[in-house]
Image (cartoon, rainbow, N blue to C red; front, side):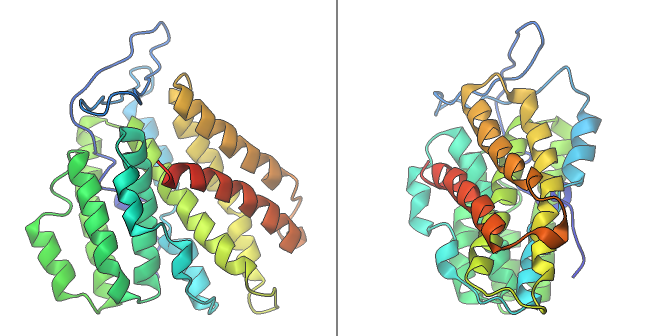
Length: 285
């Protein structure tokens, strides 16, 4: 399967965010307002050229890549690894909406990858709802929804439609430089892809045939570094700083693995445990 970048696919939300407000502190770091659930606070970082974000986000692979590796190695599908549909009622703050738009997007990618078409509808509905609440109406307009319905049993077509939806967001993002919440969506999507992969793989004994998946999970450290770099522009915000601290904890565990070949089940379990802890905070709103 072709590997697409997050800036090309990840999400409707990279363009997410409507009305604006900039932090005016001396170093111009943008701060998100978690207490404001009615007026969206657009997040920009005037001190950082937008081109830098475009480059950095493009370096993060969309979850389809790691999920496709699971599928090709015949790792069984696990619906319980996905964020529950009903959790959407918990997402009242913009932090939660953005992060979980990323999470649900990765879940949608998981369903498409495993051709679990009957489970897609609810996840499309949730991503559409969060996108609209974050003021991104075009990625899931009626025309796009008609395509999802028409090709609901065709994996290749659905994959292209998902990317087509997200490309609309990518264009808006580049035009409006709305990258603060975009960083949260990227974080949610990346984390969920890694969570699903590590959780399902832990239930499968390591064999010669699937041992390469350890390397795939190991190399996610590269994307983790980029995710942290994106969020650090907003580190003065207390919520963001907490997410960064959790991600740095995962980085520390990755640093204890000296080579791909030395990654074992115990190390994977340790990394998964911290991923699960952060993911639980996110999906609980």
